[in-house]
Image 1 (cartoon, helix red, strand yellow):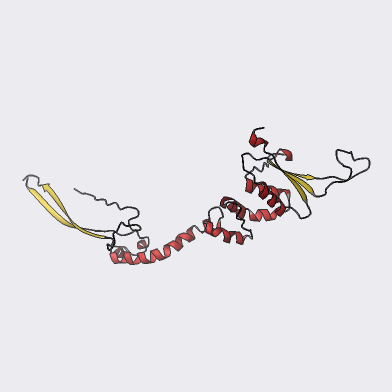
Image 2 (cartoon, rainbow, N blue to C red):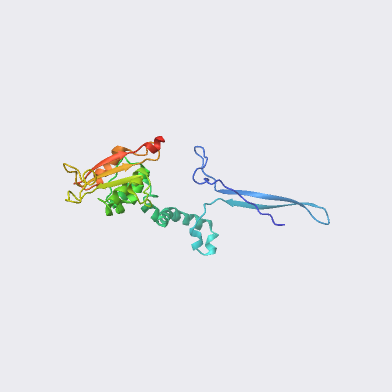
Length: 249
């Protein structure tokens, strides 16, 4: 008859041992097994004893790189564990290096480095989540800076308002950016009150209308800061935040 014994150690056995002052962690256990059995035919009661040595060792990855003969030597395993503990953290970091370079998964302490990498200024007024989105989208924001598309994308990343790219009419979008255009006064083609006004207008002027979906979704002061930062210097603008959807009107 074969009997298999299983020994289960706590997951934090090596990292967090419950030791009192002056005690050391026990890794080698020496004991004996006593087996009582009855001999068939004679009915005699017999006892067999054998020594059992249990050596508790952390799992080693490097032992599979040595011949099987050396794997049975306890000292070799413990010796290789020294190098494994020194090099394995660096190896694991290299295996997931992509996660350190992605602003969405990188540690928070690494965000200033990634922001500097793309020349993006860190503004403490943004939440950590928003900073991650903005750093990841910095190159695209640079590409469209000074355009309606770039301004809409920036406001979308901050406010989480939909881009509504499937909506054709600008006035129906949650982020509506209307440019005030006109051909000026053309004799015979201009209609007063419709496409021209007496006294002239403001050239390079646009209007931004936001339609938030929930309360406190839009910080008007921060949105103005975004517009001032993204618009061409010679442009003027107006900002309106429509709270009618939030209030249910």
